[in-house]
Image (tube, rainbow, N blue to C red; front, side):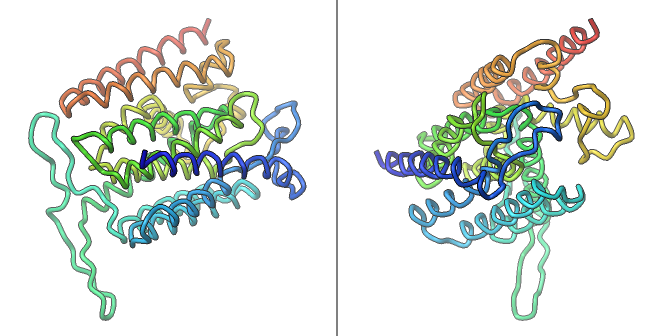
Length: 351
């Protein structure tokens, strides 16, 4: 019952804010540009990510003590949302977006949010805290755990971009965020982890995402925008770190999306294109992302959403009951399944 009030507050407040946004956003000109992507529909209120950040900030200050880590998370989230909101309106350079994501990771590391060890599936742990650098800033001393900092920044950038690139169909990011945060919630309340504060944060994120999903699921009434998809990505990345460094669990939940993101990066590099620049669908008339390829061979948007939801839920639930060794093999199965699915989609598209 201790999680009922935070969850209900997150759900109710998000619903209320979204109902207001549906009336106010169009009057402020905060709508998307469907003509930019060749869509023949009316403009939709956009971006909802700004609301999500404000709601999360309010709930965090109500239900948690204002620790250095929490303040750092809010500062990092605020920076990411502001830059993404501006980018939603005027299209900032890709390098600036990437620099912002790295800066977000640096802020998290600076306030002590990081991964110091990774569990080895074949036994023991892989330490990331062996090399430490002492830094002086006037009278201040700071110890930088080098490999932990680098891994944490890379993890945050990966998950933030994974969720952003996943936002190709309305309802996909919000639905996956619901599944991911619920898995991390149940993991946090288990006897193995037992982290009530992290469980509270996870249920807040889950209920915010669920409320948004009700408005975001096809056909959408409001859109996340880059600010929303990246902010949800940041929250999932940080929850994975807080939950005892459950990187493998989060990887299984977001497995298809992460592998899709890695495939897109390799595809762009192979085609001599910067990994952070998109536009394959418009420029080459060739879908690259998994969800776009499924659409291209005849799946409806609802079918794509349900298929990815089911796959993510299956691997997320499996992650709750497996040890580290089992998760390793589950990730191997996930990778093989992704390759097989990719080959099937490619063959279908050629036909």
